[in-house]
Image (cartoon, rainbow, N blue to C red):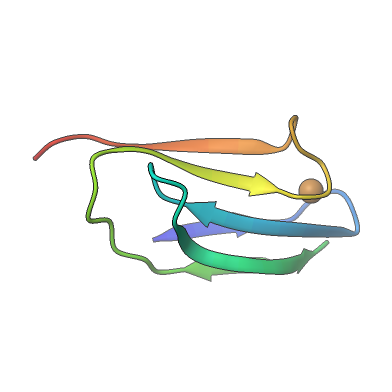
Length: 68
Ligand SMILES: [Cu+2]
């Protein structure tokens, strides 16, 4: 589960991709003052990238998926 509260910046175009660049959470606009909760499943080990298309490269996050 990914839970994000948008504290700053009016709009963000956010997308989550898997280690091969495949889309896990489709690009959507997230707005200030709202909380977004997304559920997703991982089927690959590696780095998943959360990125805002408006504010990259500074507004990014990496979710590391480790082997079980
Ligand atoms: Cu942004």
